[in-house]
Length: 203
Image (cartoon, rainbow, N blue to C red; front, side, top):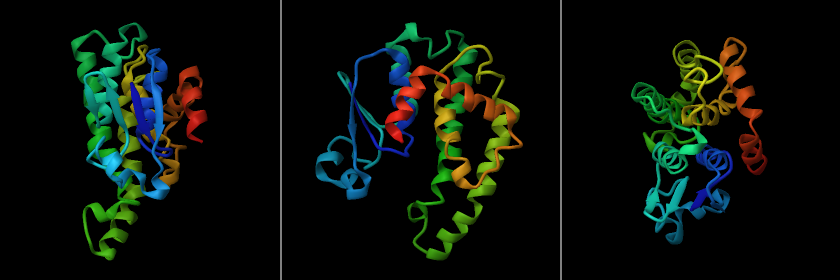
């Protein structure tokens, strides 16, 4: 497998999952500074012009949640997805919230042009980022963290996805002091060898 990724992006989640899985993979870094994600060569891999993109023997995936699910299924011995039906549904629920709500709220800080052409609208979106991301963190703290992991004792792809987005919170102006469980979760993630190995390449 080949993972196309860039530093500072959600691609870290798929990278961590691959490190956790024990599967063989290669990393292909995409240079956002030169606009490589918009080149004809990269658009042939991911027409969305974004990262990550995961090349597999079956084809290419371009959405993080799908990648996490595939990696977990390809490496069941890594224990990245629970066997229980309800627990899997809770993992999917958090994946969707992170993708459809929290990631979008974060993107309003830098990517307002995706939703509006008016510079004043961009500023209005930026002004809401800290409030929205704080509200999201509060919801995670209250409703999604059982400790030490999202599912309680069982580690899963939900933890990987959550950690990747939680790393953006302070940069979005969120005070993490009111969220001790979330902070503990981040610390537990950073103590994992696979996470440490992946993070070292994203600094």
